Length: 289
Image (cartoon, rainbow, N blue to C red; front, top):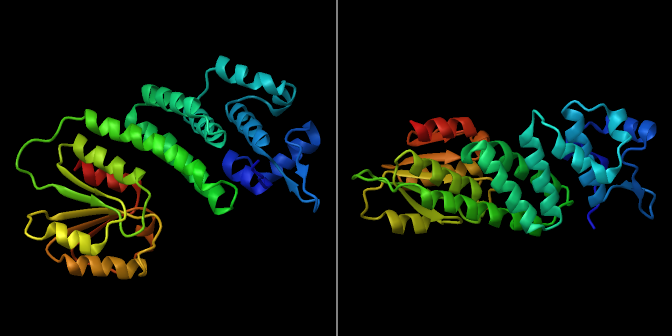
């Protein structure tokens, strides 16, 4: 059983801790358990319940009405009502499925989200926010790595399937090389970039995750490839992020280095052969152009 603090519940549901405490006192919503030390905590069932409550609340239900509903009837109200925020429902359902390791529910939810939102919008508006919430839990030791691996593998397969369905670019265009640095194993953003490049008729050589600079040197030797595109979320290269970028740019001075991922915002050096894509929006603009 996973145990969550009220701060965890706030981060995941988007409902302020102060509001949650008022709901608890006034309506009996989300009454915490207590450890032997008397500290308050919430479990998986509490998390699922508050995600349902938050969804209804954010889509117009009054909290007094929600409090009067039986817990096992909340799903019926969600299913029977048309809401403004389908994306939040998909995101919350994925969280529920991941915490229960429910493969069928996770895949069914993804399939429905892809059908209704389209592939790109689903990745940007459902999958990415989902992983942000899982990341918050993991950083607070409230999610186990298996839950992220469980969902990552399912989503990874969906993106690979989408890539395979795209028409292979034709012509003699120089391909862009896609990789992540040493010990960077987050593959979803890199696969999504692969999908976008291929969709926009750009040939790709996909080297995958955890690629060392020596491996890149061996690969690029004697080839005409001029663009190296990498995504980085966690830096385990053994260098500061500035140092790693400088080494990469100096090792491949005739290549264009394109860097994406959250750590682009930590870069303080400027290298003439490097382009920093500091947001998802900038990455999309770059690939589409």
